[in-house]
Image (cartoon, rainbow, N blue to C red; front, side, top):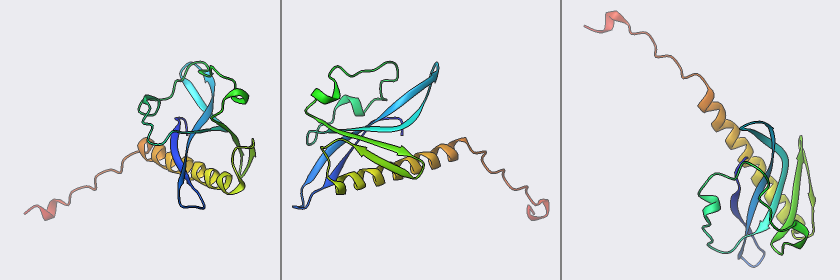
Length: 134
């Protein structure tokens, strides 16, 4: 997952808590970014259709103006390593953490499948049987 996404977390009272998941990316070479396995989680305003999420993520440099510790919308980070994940922060309860970890894993799997299908060679058309063209 290389672009930020908006999602919601169901609450016990039936309401939804809206959040932004921002992947932390590492730049290996010019124009070559890859995931680090770390995702920052922020509060999101209800119905906020920010331009941030209709355009690709900023790819060059860090865009943080406010350190996470001072940002009232910062909820923590999810770190993924292999099949394991851990949460760093205090803004999400354990159920919310698990829900977001599953969401991220599912999103990564979906993107990997889409990337594979886009890069895969299309199947060749079967040869025509000349005898069936009568």
